[in-house]
Length: 146
Image 1 (cartoon, one colour):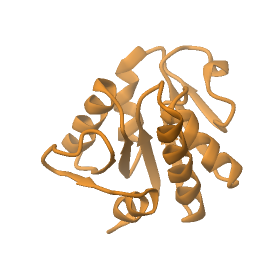
Image 2: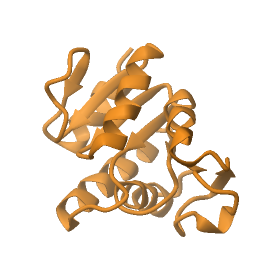
Image 3: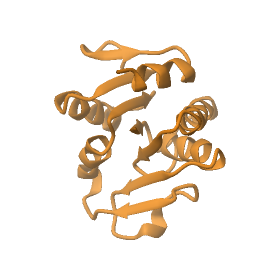
């Protein structure tokens, strides 16, 4: 599966570590990580996935693939700004939100509209249709469930 990890471009160290663990577990479970390719949660998840030997697809808002965080293995430039959020969730079979703000909320809404499973690890846990998880392991288990 390709699983999108979504979250804020700036985050606390604790949230970064949660995202890194999600990325690692995704790869160890045989999945490819899709994210927005920048910092914060995106970088944390990318780092965990990359260091575990996995593939990271980073869908970037700008035109320069060098904007990607150093752990993205396949940068995709879009020149779409935040409109690229749709491409991030459209290219995942499920989405895991790690905390996040309104950009994350928009991705969650689009993923739900696309019929994707959305799992939230902190943050927007009260939204109808969103599954909640307490740990990175639980988030990945829920995201990959049939």
